[in-house]
Length: 199
View 1 (tube, rainbow, N blue to C red):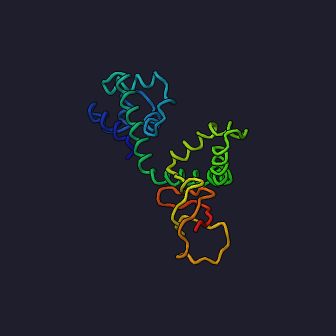
View 2 (cartoon, one colour; view 1 turned 90 degrees about the vertical axis):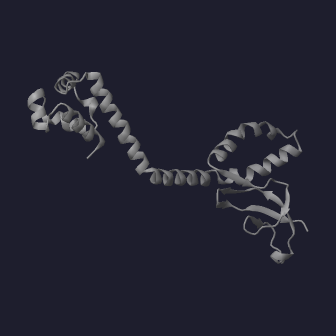
View 3 (spheres, rainbow, N blue to C red; view 1 turned 120 degrees about the vertical axis):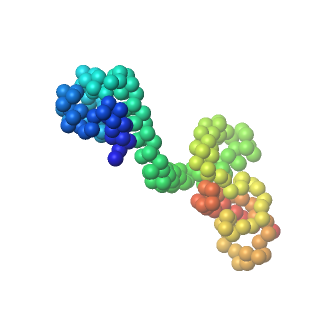
């Protein structure tokens, strides 16, 4: 039974009406209108019909509409809560598609910003403030950079990808310099930071 039907049944019980047939006879309204109400089609019912329904229920039209609108809100809330997992999956999928579209920008931009910060006279310095919305978007999605370009950090093979092809064993690598920033979203690694060895 839908939330709307429960509200209608409650109002009918208060008015001592047992079913839609009786309701139709007393109100002189077609049963079809009650099914429309049940299915959340309040906008498709003429005001004159709503007045007859309200009069038969011994309530004002405003009270009837308030009851039915509250029912609609409850129905929407229940639907959303039941589908929250589905909605969450859709959002994640959308974010991943967007990230793949922005991939080259995400991977190259921190290096460009680093170069601009080290040489403020570069004409590119004018574009840096324009890129703040991208950083805000990433932050909103819980996407965090792995390091900053130029940082010297301990090598972590889970988060870092070596740019050079070397014959070093992982255990021999101490410090690396971040050349291209990587990204993670919560516990998920999106891109490894590209690093060079600085032993």
